[in-house]
Amino acid sequence: MALMVVAALLPECVHDSGQQIVDGVYRASSSREALTVMGKSITLHLNATKGPQVGMLSGTYPYEVLTNHELHFSASSNDSFFVFTVLDYKWLWDGKDIIRRHGSTGDVETFSRQMTSGEGE
Image 1 (cartoon, helix red, strand yellow):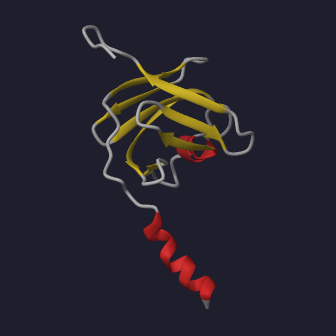
Image 2 (cartoon, one colour; image 1 turned 30 degrees about the horizontal axis):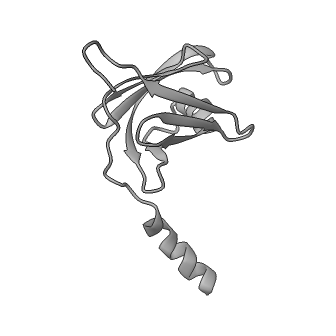
Image 3 (cartoon, one colour; image 1 turned 60 degrees about the vertical axis):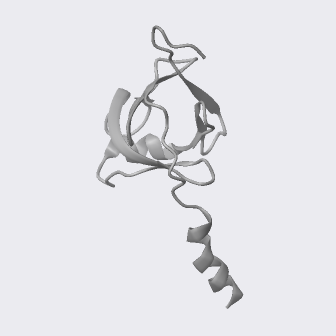
């Protein structure tokens, strides 16, 4: 019975924080991959290595920043790019960068926002 109580409370522990990622283009330093944030949606330009299509692919998804800093994307289970590429990773927002951690290998890639002309840090 106690296990059921913990499971019932779990969804309330982590929820939408209401945070929004700063609009802009976030680039990975070690690849051509990039993320473009516009409002409450994010376009992922990633190198897909498995699935029906491989190579540089893109998809745009609504997102939420959860209270544990994880990014939650909304997508269809019929979206092969999302299923075969995006879901392979844990995505985090640290308040400055978007961090991608591979679910199997633990490899980490940091996507940093490109400054536009006239913008300072």
